Image (cartoon, rainbow, N blue to C red; front, top):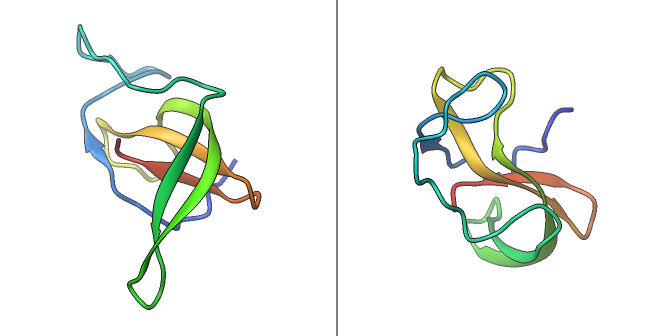
Length: 85
């Protein structure tokens, strides 16, 4: 599935789907957890949007080798975004 690219900050490292997560890597949230994401608008204003963690250590086609986002989040408005932390 393709994500709506609202906030495209990435984290260097590696993870699932053929990628190794460094030993001891811990995330604050897990799939299903409710969160709020800071989304930068086109006018460069930050807006907080509620959502649910859809997946962790998220990758999609086109990410550089070894790059991932800590979280993919399904916002309450239906958009999928990814976040570094």
